Length: 466
Image 1 (cartoon, one colour):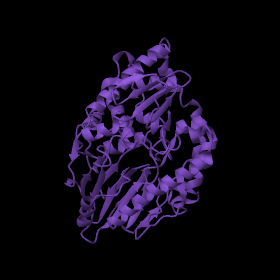
Image 2 (spheres, helix red, strand yellow):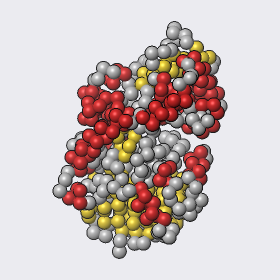
Image 3 (cartoon, one colour):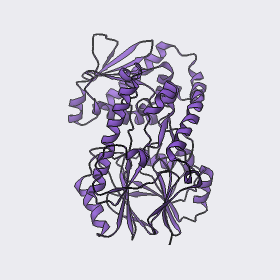
Image 4 (tube, helix red, strand yellow):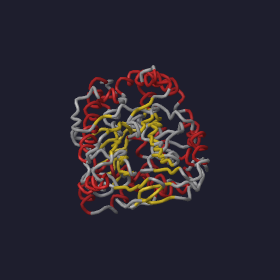
């Protein structure tokens, strides 16, 4: 009996149950996520080998994609997969992510309804969208006759009672529960905030990163205990930001957190009754004998040491990181700063129109906000969400200032970047006024709008294929 979990990278595991397999959130290629992240460490299986394995598996291998972020949905890889491969994807209200899968030529897409099982070989697959947290991410629950695998992804919020009861009920009191959840931070704070970055206050930055990471992990551990999990798997933070490496070089390396079990054990966390599985990318967990086997490169070598050497290689490659973007930018050589301001005004006007279509409670909250986009060494535009006016009024104090260089502004406006590239991909600087005001709702709406703009609203003359 072969019942194994092969840890490929980041959030990607290959679950094996005799002759059937489920591949979770594949990202085996060197494609960038948020125009900045690379998987760290990279997938130990070449993406062509993995695709060939899938394509020769006679539909006994299915792919689960939890949501459409680049680090969970690798377009360049999915295009290599046989279109008839069974794909399982949560049923989201918005169909933009589903269209993305279709555009990758996948034709056997099975939408998963909330807490309703879909069967695939020995697996039963269900999903749960924690809508108060996100409308575009989901917890995936995979059950067999022997175990339950909770693929929690980026849902670092307290699990609702309905979800907790569902997981406990399907365990039938005897199935082992494995709980995999995000163990790192995936946004721009504190990396993109000038009070730390410009002042090179790396010690304070490290303290904030550690505190935020601990909070995220503790929420995940608490959820694992709520569902009475046996084992906790650390994942969803095995990445490295090429943008940060390019900006700060080796000085940023001590700040970047590697979520290995060894490093988690150094944090003051309350583990309750759940056991942290000593399990890293490259490892295989064998369910039948409850053991972890190591690949040859980890038999004698320390995982953290190998990751450190990989950081150095990534650092060297960061010097050529922007080359492809610089090639794309040649299209805009004949555009002036006045042209850039005109297109940025259109972007802000589109964002205001998007906010006006929101529900009344959200509009009421956001209509008191002023948002500033500042182009480095040039000028600023301030959008007053109260009346939709866009001005250069220096007397109007913004609630949020986003500082971006001309290059990245053109990449945003032409749809190469989206807003998450600025914040999660670390391609811009952010300031809050007052500093203690977090602007969560504004940032969430900017991220949602960013995808809408990228897919529907980019002016045709700015498309780089024109």
